[in-house]
Image (cartoon, rainbow, N blue to C red):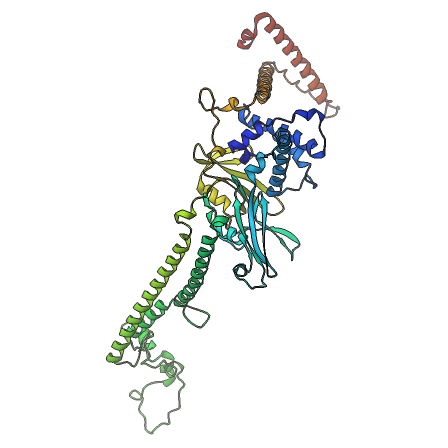
Length: 588
């Protein structure tokens, strides 16, 4: 409702709708029975939005009539596209009644149809036979899953089946193209963000990110541009195929190797170059231990104490008279030592200076070649992306601009959630957020975050674009005599002006009654605060032989006495007020 209300042309059509002259003889059928009361309530609703002094207005009376069209449980939420379909159907029927009454021998023109409905031509081949059909559309449905932006959705919607067969003379394949022949001033896209999960047996919401622009050029989808568009589509297809090849080649450079772990090829060559340039440092791990031992007062690190103990005293200390057979002593540390010539870090062990020079030269050259190839591939890929983006930017393809007017957002899952809308204020050139009774200033950045999807459970699934060249859609109304802009109540027909004035009077009366009620409550509270409180009776002393408790007065008795005292005090104050006036009594 808010999105449509902020279309000034639509607002004028609703506000200036006059029921048919023979309305007293209606209803002639079920449509008239429901549509005319709905239009009456919708006019009242829009009139209140224009001139009400209330912070917000209640749309329940119009919605209750419209809700009868949905045969479902009241607790079940209705899809916004289905709701809008029903709303436009009823508006079309209501204006059709009026149009038929006013026609003068010509086919009646329905302003709702002219505002919201367009036509497209379906051209295709079915089992080898060509066909052409012209169809009317209102809201245009678009699939979201598998696409990254609105143009990709539109391209997929405009082409079905084997498109090549449309241009060949002899083919049994089937396919069709859609070409817009007439676009409506107000173009609404339904974004299908729900799909049925066959495995789970329930609908699920699609949270994928889908971008859409503030200005959408639709020239490429027009029937008059079909030949140029086909040429550009073929060129884009060829570029995308070449782009795929380049991306595959780049992937080989950026993810090199045949095993599970892959690395950029330029890094692999750099690692090989660092390895080739490394100098071997040959030390024994025992030397490393010795380097960390104290300088004196200890045994040599090569011979552990246990070995010395096993050997006993040396031959120089103990004289020997006969040769002694030495037994083999097991030395686990010294016998399992790493060879002393093993380098401390990976490095070439056997390489001549000439070999190293040749290898370093090759690795440097290969690394430079890989860097250049990678950079060239990335630049080529960026250039192709840019070419595809600018494919439709020539002057002939930017003649049909549509400006984003409103975005309807849903947050939640498939079965429930919350709705709000972003609506563009074309006169203040800013976005506004309409969230229930709250209307706040917003930005394109906030709209992107909440509407594109992929960020959280919020995403748009209804986009309303308007023809940017049709300024009457958002143009203010002018006084024909003075030329001044009509604002507020001046834009309303006399019957609606009276209706809003009466509602504002009721609202002012509600405020007065509310203020009086608050003043009365404040006065009563002040008078009650002045009533003297009776001291609580002291308990009688307990005499010997008597029980240790006495009968206390009940809460009912105390409340009754207090109430009587309060009534007497209030009556006394009121009597004094009549004698001395309210100012005197408030001063006491």
